[in-house]
Amino acid sequence: MIEQEVITKAKQAKDAARRLAHLPARVKDAALLAMADTLLKNADDILDANAADVRAAREKELSRALLDRLLLTTERIQDMAEGLRTVASLPDPVGEVVSMWITPSGLQVGQMRVPLGVIGIIYEARPNVTVDAAGLCLKAGNTVVLRGSSEAIHSNKAITDVIACAAVQAGIPEGAVQLIESADRAAVNVMLKLNRYLDVLIPRGGAGLIQTVVNNATVPVIETGVGNCHVYVDSDADLDMGREIVFNAKCQRPGVCNAMETLLVHKDISDQFLPDMLDKLRSAGVEVRGCERTRALAPWAIQATAEDYATEYLDLILAVRVVDSMDDALDHIYQYGTRHSEAIITNNYAKGKRFLKEVDAAAVYVNASTRFTDGYQYGFGAEIGISTQKLHARGPMGLKELTTIKYIAFGDGQVRK
Image (cartoon, rainbow, N blue to C red; front, side, top):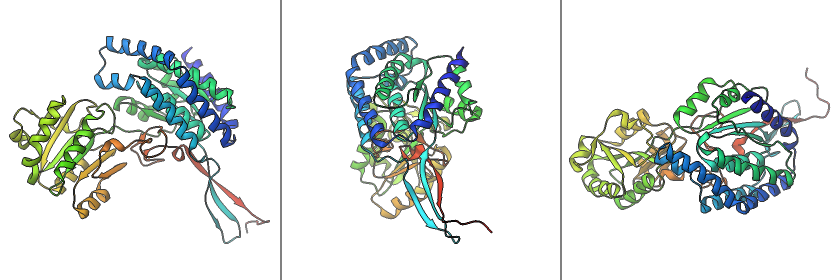
């Protein structure tokens, strides 16, 4: 029964993909605008469905971070609609000729962007992903098979019902947006092996989900990664700037993957920076776990362990370490980082440039919060996820990252000798 649902919907998406790949941009853009309008028109019904999910999640005593990801508000629905409108306003990547050259044989050879095909999205407790994924996939000429978690099933169903209908009415092939409604994990197992119908899988969620998909899928996977993100406050930092950035990186929305999880501070400015900074964080409800030198400046902090430095908390918990040098900070990030987002606070140009060059991460910042690692913030309208791998995409994935290339060649009778 579960297997049949997944196969049936994936096949419908595959059938729709051939037609969707060649639709003109005006049809896809009209569909995205219609989807945005229907989200706002049906906001009350979506919020009612979401309230049922949130009540059930609270009864299960899910974490504060998961509850925040699950919760929809009128403002968040408006943001989802605005994201669709922004995606509609962006250039259509499909058919773009990336480069063109003449070969010695006289062939004119080029690279053209084309859709990936059918994209499977497996995600946890984030109803906004339903909208972002559908919008980006459609604009890039892909169909999508969505499988959200059981915690968000009512929200995802309410959203998919209205946006899929609006898309079809605007000219998108029926079946292009599919939601697997079974909450059974067996549905995921079917998707992982469905090479016949799915061209790529993208998991979005915690480390457990991501590793399950990466380790068991035969369908190609684009790995979106865990965000154990660091901010390093250098000896040449503007300390007032540093306090603003650190507070934002940890507290603005702690339950997301680009929030800071570890604060590294140079020993030469630790006594000037840390006492006030940690008091401010504690006043905001942050639990601080620090090294011995941190605890000498803030005795109330909990003793940090190696596990603390390796943990993505997604909560108001922060690991802190005082380091002897920038080299120590780089070594710490190399050991514990997850190649997601890293930041340095410094007024030393050479140090900032070195940090950008040497840190191996999808996004690296000088004097800015890690919270900016986001497709919307980067001007993509939305994102399908933040990839921490190096193939086939890295960082926030927008429209271009949902395409591949094919080679096109123009000749005038050439034959190979």
